[in-house]
Length: 181
Image 1 (cartoon, rainbow, N blue to C red):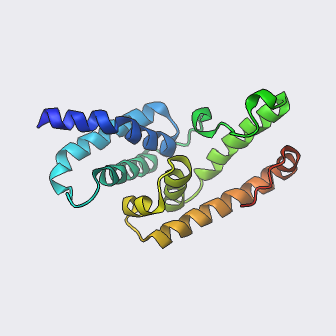
Image 2 (image 1 turned 30 degrees about the vertical axis):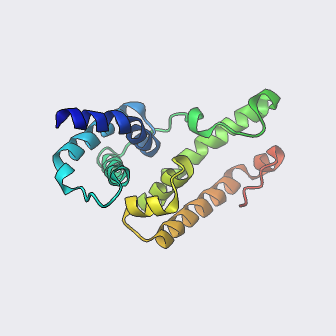
């Protein structure tokens, strides 16, 4: 049994750590949360409904553990997330130093603003826009209908767009970013 559980850990460690990191934005905290997730999983594996996807059940544990951790420790660290948020266009090689600086400043602000969202909006934002999960899986992870997930995601994006416009309107225009989708 321990051998099988070790295989589960090896298979899902990076995904769980990725979710935790994107939720708390601190590598050390994410490692702690990842460890807690697998301890909880080990002790609750008998509760897993085998008719469901294991990854969805595990990601739900990861999201809940991350939210609990944030609430408990009120951590609001905003480390740089270049690996997640590097702009795809234009490439760094064609950007001026000012553009590189401004994109970095905007990315950091997005994550600061996102942490101010309520738990459900923040979770929907992280799982969809950072993890790239589909709405149906997010729905299962968050335990709510897909339409509700879409609503939380819509509200999160609307809030973040408005916040960005207020803070960086002229800069966004200068960089050629409309802020509307």
